[in-house]
Length: 287
Image 1 (cartoon, helix red, strand yellow):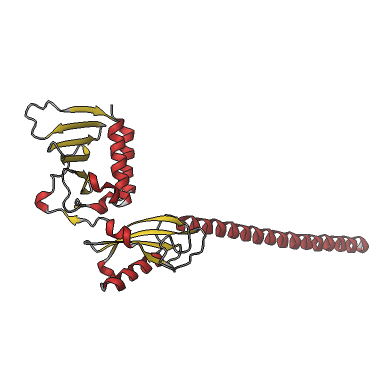
Image 2: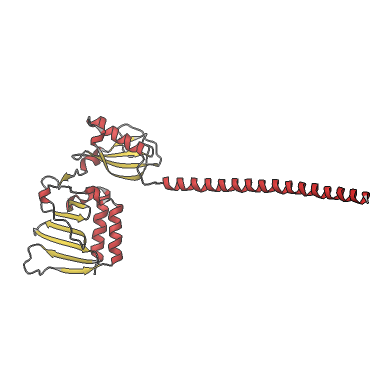
């Protein structure tokens, strides 16, 4: 009987010992799995976060701050004014055809290679300066010829501003002058209506009513926002001194009014030229 009890105890202790060993192994394995999963999750989170940060910071069309600072500093030194008196009014990415950024000086040798960079317009409200730079701003050159031909805007006097838009109007163009000396008003309505009338036409005989789709209206509104039309608020780009028989266009959106003339269209800032082109294309497509 004692022998049987001893054997039972020995066998039971062996089973308990084995169970403890197995439990320990399972516990270690479980811990390793948790650590592995945690590390994997951490790595995935880190990768996703890094990708999101990179995605948010990739803005290839935005002018880098070092490039902007280099240009503003150059204007300030040349003109003897403070950088805070200057504003970058237009810029776009450019690939120059040589190391001199296509602004070769007399007796200067230029590396014949494509150089990515920027074309930048700076203004103090009275005068504009056009610059060519490389991609980083370490090379900066003033385009004197282009600077002379670039228009400098002036503020439209408050007394000459047209009335604000009615609630159902998205955009308005007023054209005046030319050989005939007539004034026309064209308005784009939210529902796609495009109405053109001649100011002073007592019989309203020249009124025309056409239409574009609501989708085109919405696309045009989004385009105005992307082009930052509001930055031209209450600015006028006057005709050259001595010019005659030109047509003056006054464009008004919910953000403000800008004025230009037909003979100076090609010298307007690129963003404003794009707005004019898109507006003309929209009106031409109306039925």
